[in-house]
Length: 194
Length: 340
Image 1 (cartoon, chains in turn yellow, red):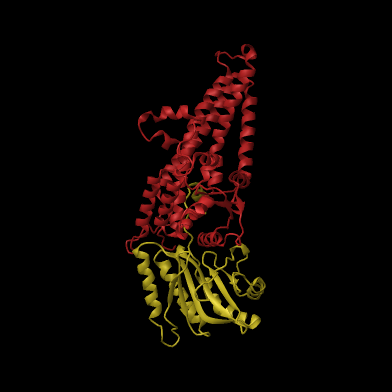
Image 2 (tube, chains in turn green, orange; image 1 turned 180 degrees about the vertical axis):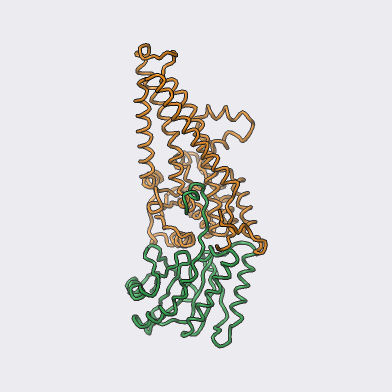
């Protein structure tokens, strides 16, 4: 925020960075090679709904758009829409494990639909789920406003596997922009699509 | 440039600019008057002015630097970890990610009055504090989020810094009045020898100028404070996208406040400027002399003039306007300009 905006108490809503998301498919290959985690094929976009009909119209438009390809080869399952207890909306897109490209394209469609309609600042994060053969859960969370990723590895209860998160962070350092400020690695307990 | 739905409020910007300009004008006039008086009479009053500047500036800087610690200990609040208050932290985490800002420390004050404040000298050292009363006042998650978004906007707008700079003038002027008064009281015997051509002691002139400056800047600071509350409401509502949730939180909190006994309110009053809702409806009489004169025009009431927060009606009115703006269809398009 510029000096003048601060002085006048005007916050400019932060526009999301969308493009860094496309680094995900190649990073997934690195992740598999170094840690054994493979994509589950599902991912989700989390955004803050705006009250009013305009926003809910756009929301349902996006859902219809994603569902057009559902059931076709490479089209994945119909999207699931959930609202979490904090008032955020999650659109979950589910594909096959090897269709990460299609998944990212789906997620990007949500982003650009919101951004094109002027609701870009409402985007919070996107999440792509991974599993290893021991069924450990891992998500790469993309922060739209920062254009960075961080790993989130929930254990049972409200505990995080910090060692695994650090390991993933180090493994992906060259492929993804990893969020360096650890205070921004906020937990997304029970996030849909994990 | 991406299209933006979030047009700045021109009217608010203009009013705030004018207020700050007037404050600056008073400041310049004050300095000019003091320098003028001193050079005209070559008096020893310079020492008093210098003292006031050093004391006033020093205390302002100190209170800015320690604002988080002062406010926390005044409120008896303690900083809580994500383990202590997972819900609260989760809301703040998400808001900070939406707004792309550093996460402040989160604290809870053991006060029954439902309220919240944010303070700190910069975004790295800021702290966001809510009272027990707020957490128990029956706000739902999204209403609580609205309150927190309002407070985070105060942090983003650097309101503590802005208000400290704005009050500096009033602090110095207030000190000058006091110093001049004491020096007149105790140095009264030397008055005849120390006197200037005009016959009026320098300290008295300085005192008179300072009283006027204090009164005017006091009123201007209150005006500025009200505008900054409106600005924080606006940014908070835009951040969550839920102006009506903030509006209902405001209504609930204001209703809760009026039920609380007086002692509580008085204890909370020093923190008033940073609170979500004002803890007191009327301020005490300081600077009231200047205010009374200005109030003769039959404009807003005295309590409104001195209030640090805009009236509930004004705040709800603004939120209703934001709600209409957000609901506008895409094709109609709000200002798609560079957002300035």
